[in-house]
Amino acid sequence: MPHWGNRLKPFPAAPYLRSHACVAPTIRHEAGRAMRGRTWRKNDGERCGMILRIQEVVGGDLTAGLDGAARAQHAIANLRTQVADYSIGADRLAVVAAWQGRQEVNVDGRRVLVDDDTWLVLPKVQASVRIREPRPMHALTIVFRPGMPEEVLGSLITPEDRLLEDGEVASNPGLPFVPHLQTHDRSVTPVLMFIRRHCDMGLDDPLWYEEQLSFLLERMLMRHRHLMARARNVPVRRAATRREILRRISLATDFIHSSYDRPLMLTDMARAAFLSRHHFLRLFKHIHEITPHEYLQRKRTTVAARLLRSTALGVEEIVKVVGFDSRSTLFRALRRFHGITPRECRHALDTPAFMTAASAQA
Image (tube, rainbow, N blue to C red; front, side):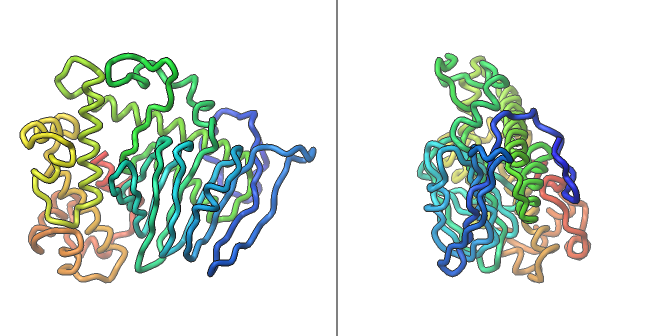
């Protein structure tokens, strides 16, 4: 076990990996100027796999930095910025998260917004990401080196994880993840925040990052299985049909998380899932055990509570920002989902996303 000195205690250990990692030059984009850090190697001087860390971007296009990572590299973009643009190639598994702001991701022809309540997995799909915020926000994007997810999860993924739409098991199976927003929980979120905190501290320990990314992948697989277990609530016989239903309902929840600030009707949500209103309502309740309207109100309430705690915005302005139709609607929703009034919420301590009501939507 490495000597940690004054560092934070490591997250519960992942299995020791033979593939040691080194840190490639850290790239900082400040007013268009790139600053390079150090390249670390093992004590014996042997060159090994690397991690590219992009830190503290003020603004600009990061695509060259992320796409420029060598084939043996992970890429971690830990950003405090108001403006940034980058793309993620279709040959890499990636995870996108955001705090105090939003990352706008365009994937599969859809616009998906990642905010304080959610994180997004991109399982080897082309995506473009855009940040435009009035205040500095904290963005974290992890792009795994090719082959690493398969190495870590190869012995853990079961035939059920790999079931195809026709009920057959893939002969050359890949990763089971699908490109949808996931709400924060007590499984994946603590690992993401732990990695983010060490990036903030400027930690350059390649082996530590490799181990934590391995542990993150294991937690992501646990999360995937939890979602699949939900699909078993749908009264259909074939497992592949349940997976397709879960995929379509996930399209609708992505739509809700990305468009909650607009007036949304049941027809709009059903259209996002490519389902009729009747079937959408029935299937949504089977999977989430609440109605689409309640899911939408929970999302709006969670955002409103966060704005009350972290900004000086007035109640009337927050009502408009989150899409509620009146102050009384916000008051009732806060009382129902959080058990507090706006005044009490304003003075409450900020709570990690995975400890709030947002996790109830998971």
